[in-house]
Amino acid sequence: MTETLIAVLAVLGTAVTGLAAWAVARRATSGSVKTSEAESLWAESQAMRKELRDEATASRAELLALRAELSGVRTSLEAVRAEAELCHKQMVVTRARLAALEDNGA
Image 1 (cartoon, rainbow, N blue to C red):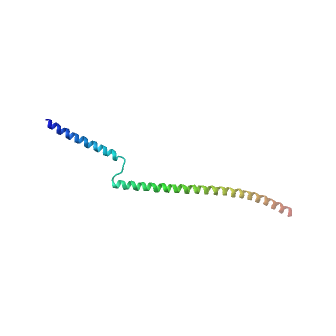
Image 2: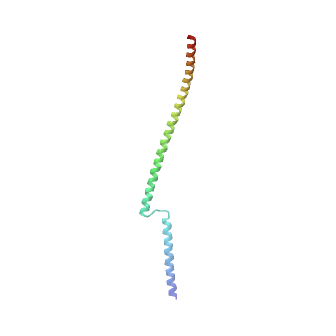
Image 3: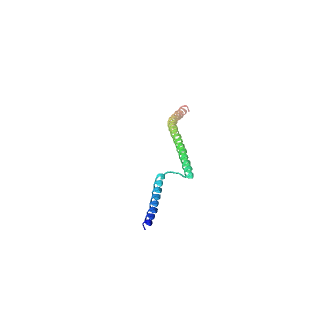
């Protein structure tokens, strides 16, 4: 009976040791990518993220440059509109003078 008990305890001890080793190994590899396919997919996704970040940075720089250019165009447009309004007022005054001259000369 003692031999049976020792054999059962040995089997249980081996099983507990195996479970403990498995738990420790699982905890050590938790959060890491170890398979070759998963590792290559991870590397590919990292490269894609970097490419997209670089593209977003370049797009943002281009957007900022275009905004600055648009601001300059708007300023120029305001100046042209003011000049056009002044020209229109001068044209109205000139037409009135011309009409007055035509009335006096006729």
